[in-house]
Amino acid sequence: MCTMISEKADVKGSGKKTTNWIPLDSCDIYYDHSTYVDCEHSITLSFKNEMNPIDSRITVEITPESAKDIINKINAALEKGNHIS
Amino acid sequence: MNDYKTHDYEGLIAETISMKSSNGDEINAYLAKPLTEGNFPIVVLIHHLPGWDELYKEFTRKFAHHGYIAICPDLYHREGNGSPDDVAAEVRSNGGVSDKQVIEDILGASDYAKNLSNSNGKVGLFGTCSGGRHGFLIGCSTDNFDAIVECWGGNVVMDDASITEKQPISPHTLTESLSSPLLGLFGNDDVSPTPEQVDEHENLLKENDKDYVFHRYDGAGHGFMYYQTPLYRQQQSLDAWEKVFNFFHEKLRS
Image 1 (cartoon, one colour):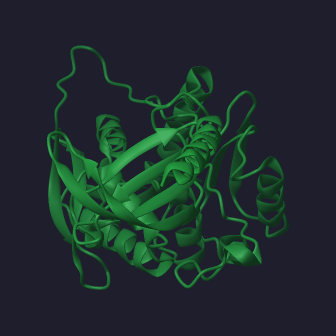
Image 2: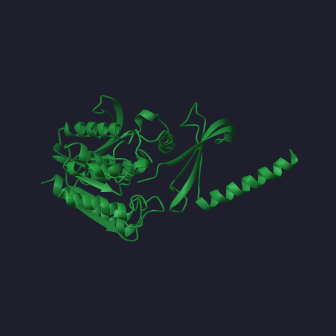
Image 3: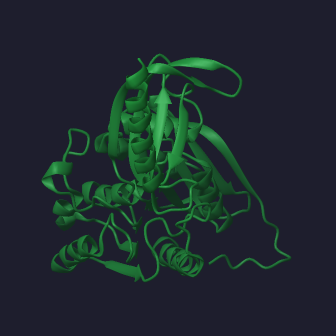
């Protein structure tokens, strides 16, 4: 069956739906069979606002390799940002 | 398989209905049934973890096309409404739905269909992924069903770390109580269930002298019948569908 591998992160941020930005306060991160991307398993990031946890969702599905690359690039950007703040 | 000829009249109705779970809750279900005369067997479809989605509604109509009253309850109805994948994401975030509630919903769907005037009273279960696990679990927890198709049911064999309040029992420990013939379809490249877990599942069925048949496909993994995903394997899927229809024909129409 599909996995139940799921993590949850508290988020303070915003995201863009089709035309407008909405506040986001949580992100579900799960590892499971892919829905669309062409690989066996993928990482899904599903940001949401807990006040409206279904319709507020902004979701991306990426390969595990992409997820690792993004983690590294976020850390690199954070490190560079720390130098100027 | 469907033995219709091109000059035969065909017709079916497929619609959303409201039904009662055996616990009394009103939930939605998708019902598809032939419009032709006859007494038809029933197939209750147990949708997968990704939700009450377009694929499962297509599967429901497929069974009706093949001469079954097919009903697929929305097991996530209580979690709210929205696009199926967003609802499923919320269910996943909340740790899934409880086994107890799923059993109650499936029993309610079965009762609803049995009360239709053109039912022959025989009921099969069909489930994939978490629905495959639920199908086996229900077969071990009730004696209401005449045939069960379990497609790649992972977590039929659960380790202690996987036990939760919502999934308190590993279904394989209930094998002795299985009350229905079982058809199991698995891909040998699957990682949930792994081939070793399918071995353990099968060994218990053998030890308990259960009426079962397993088919295990090379070159296929999890979800190999999901034509809309990269998991799809055409030849294995076509063969599996033929086995499903032959099994239900034998168990539900005799």
